[in-house]
Image (cartoon, rainbow, N blue to C red):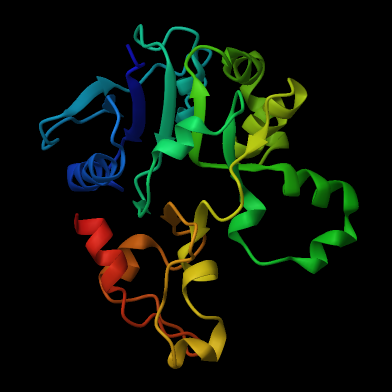
Amino acid sequence: MSETLLVLCMKWGTLYSADDVNRLAMGVRNHLNRPYRFICFTDDAKGLAPGVEAFPLPPLGLPKGHKDSRWQKLALFRKNLFGLRGTALFLDLDLVIVGDLARFFDQPGRFLIIRDDDLFRPKPLRKINPARDRFLHSVGNSSVFRYEIGAHDYILDAYLSDPVAATSRYEISQQFQSAQLAKHGDLNYWPKGWCVSFKNDCVPRNFRSFFKDPSLPEDAGIVLFAGNPKMSEVFSGGGHKWYRRIGRIDWLRTAWEG
């Protein structure tokens, strides 16, 4: 019998709504032809569609008196995540699925994540500090990652051992997460081009955008909104700059609306 795969997302606070979760669930349903469970960890399950399993936000386990919960996503690496077991693909809510998701489960590797630099254009000034440039080039973007539940609890353990030091040394949780994965030999990346940036990979660069509409790169499976404009801006007709036109996005809207 084939394994039932897990697709995970998280929603807390008011930045995203149940509609965002439901659209993501619909995208998975349209692009994953294997047995799976779609699970949303959330502090508010109202409005979630049938087929979306609502779980509470997993406890981060911060020491008493430490209330900085910005790195809530690290709680996914708990040894015991509500008794869940197996292979899980985590997806952020501000992305659009445009291709078959099966390959994201088939790709070899203990832990797979987007290389953050793959979503952005080169930053030559960063090379002024070679050590930092090497580190930033290794950082994984945690919008899309696959892991075995319970197999990487060392990430959360390292954070909880001194959360103040972690948040002082690293700007965001995905930097800390990547450093821990690299230390344990588990940091592997999706093939470049599977996860693409809407702004940098789909929209023609600069003034060319006034003569050509955004298009989908051939091998892309997921479109992300790294940096600006954000997904909400694009779908509400915004995101334009004096040097950049967004243009027609019918193909993207079709994928988003299902």
